Length: 168
Image (tube, rainbow, N blue to C red; front, side, top):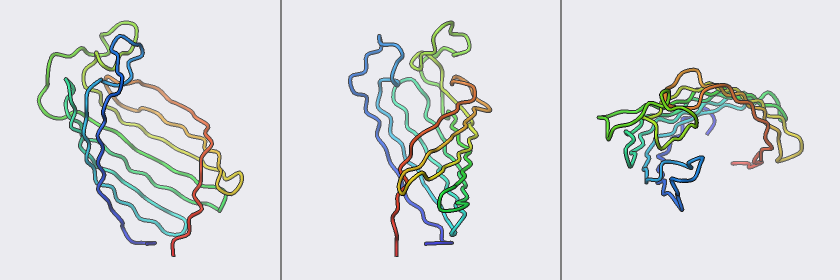
């Protein structure tokens, strides 16, 4: 499939399990959401791109969201690769029940009590293969724009599985 664009449809249903709104931090909104998206990507032996555009039908008082990402990567060698990403989402449609603005909520950030979140993130990742199938990933991700979402720059170091599949 090198050089050809491949695509797929993606669907998800988020069903809350054991959600207790009295717990802090709140783990999600406590309602069911349904998402549909189109993904597409292409690659050469060293370069690749991938994108996603989707729609999230939100349950509860949040407005639906349109979101997605665009990623591009460069496999420098068998042991080193770089990836860049731009991702985000924004609320669409008419407002539902009254909502608070997170910027006016003192103290803790509670995702159940804030208005519809929107964000734009930029990220860069370097992956180094330590041994066959195992790599270390250093990721830098920054929210460059947004409302009712967590702000700032995050750094992470992760152990990653690197599939060694061969497609013929």
